[in-house]
Amino acid sequence: MISLRSIKYLLKPHSVLKNLIFFSLITFLFVAIYLTSSWGMTAVSVIQPNKLMTKWAANKEPFSEKKWQVAATRLQSAIENNSNNAEHYFYLAALYDFKAYQKPIWNKSALKNRAIAISLYKKALQLRPTWSDAWANLAMTKTLKIEFGDEVKVALSNALSYGPWEKNVLHKVLWVSLANWKGLPVTLQQQVIRRIKETVESNGRVPDYIQQTANHFKWHEELKNIIEDVVGPKEKKQI
Image (cartoon, rainbow, N blue to C red):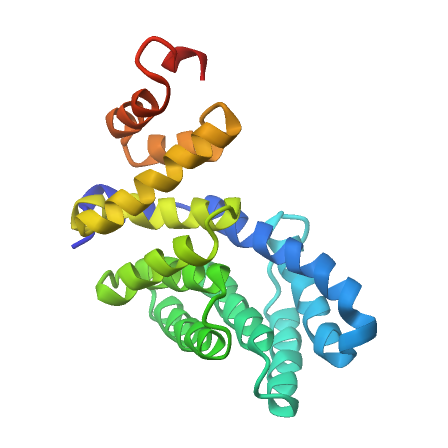
């Protein structure tokens, strides 16, 4: 079960969570623009929905049901034209995630939209099983739907395995993991801790997003112990 503290955090505004999705979307937006000449409509079909979602995530434009429907229709048409493209399913799932963010997590509409997003992320992963961002988003969306079973644990492990050096992936994995830290198997806890240590060693400091996520979930002591393992107790204040 997810802790009461974590549920209270989930009930708060989703600005942090929207930002997590924002970074993965903006990265793909540049890639899609670059590949438009070779992919044709495959890339074009996701550019407009991507631009829209990045504006929403960055609070540059208020959420619009009408614009959401236009973007969803465009991606659904892209799927009809090419049902073997994982990106179409992934970004349609992200659209449903954004729609779900407009309501409290217990809202029936939010639950329904997240259920659709989950099925779409799974379809994307059937086509592209090594997509770390899709695994991380699947874990996040199921957690926000208050579902934290074996499927989420597998998604977390796969996200870390396939995207070990992706900041956005680790940020999402850390957020989901700390939401139910005591419910994780020891092997998965060790996998998360190992990745945090590698990140601290690589950066020479604790990145802000790791510190902030630890603060959200009152994980200060655990993070302090990880830092001491990396640099020793005397040097930890300098990181």
